[in-house]
Image (cartoon, rainbow, N blue to C red):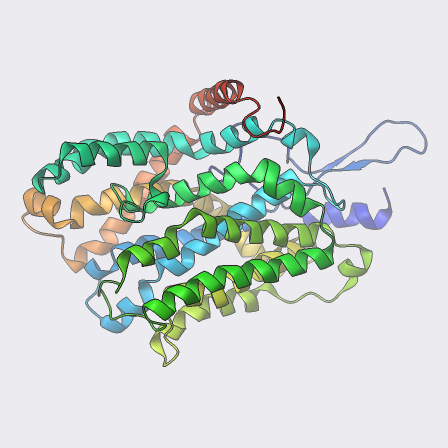
Length: 445
């Protein structure tokens, strides 16, 4: 290995953490370091991929405002603040991009236009490993809170057939395909439904094809995905309205809105954009590495500043902001931070997101995303809170609610998500399901 290459890898000392959102149970393939091949003269050392903690740290910057947004109306009565804080449908696009970024990074080859053959050799196993990385927590939380979900439906005289259908959609992660039922039970888990479809497409239709593209091809694909994603959002806006609706007002066409923000095909496009972004960095040559780097902080600030348009005359709806500004800018931020992390002197924002604190908080993003909805229902859903507390909790309770979510997420992360027994069971179940579905994702007799 050349001196410059070794210096670059040694200087990085950063890592990518394939967390519960997009990693594999027990996957240790991306440990990152320089490994000596043989002690023979002329042998070239093998460089494995540097790990980039800063990407995982970004998850908390996405999940915290989403947690706040879902119950913000119980935390403040200020309409201006509510208008700014209730943009969870914009921010969630960043999670799909990060999921694609990590998947592309760990499943394709560094510096080569090809995928990791060993990782994709068994596409069914690849798919089930990813599903089993997040399904156990979804299953256990759904089961713990199922009595509450079902009781609420009994209070509203919901037919048992409807309740059974919703339970089926929840446990099978199919709710994102049904716009009328997308927000059943634990509403934020529609994300997992859309993510599952995207993961199904990864090992055969997406990762191998994107990995073969040159830098020029990647750029064209990124623009094309952005355009197609935006086309659907413009279509919705033309039917409904281009500007955001009044604070707490219902959408004009709720089912069309649900199709716009929840549909698995839209999630697939944003996840593929993340893969494209990761590949662009992975194909950097020596000339690319010598180019002057932009400080990632400007792209980070620009992406989040797009949320501020809600307070101006350019208060476009969430779909337009997400497709035209936030997702493209946030994606560019990830690539800029990735390149910066590989430099000898990373910028302050890169060091901040890669710090132990942000990595630890980033690890809480998944349990926070799953838990905050049911916990919020206990305190704020009218039919539940009135029976438990006499009324929904006051605005002064909102910081306590956030602390409860953080504490419960930490507890669940330490005792369940990181449990070796749970990980081992997930791995065995993934293998079992892969064996039973072998050949389903392959063109063979």
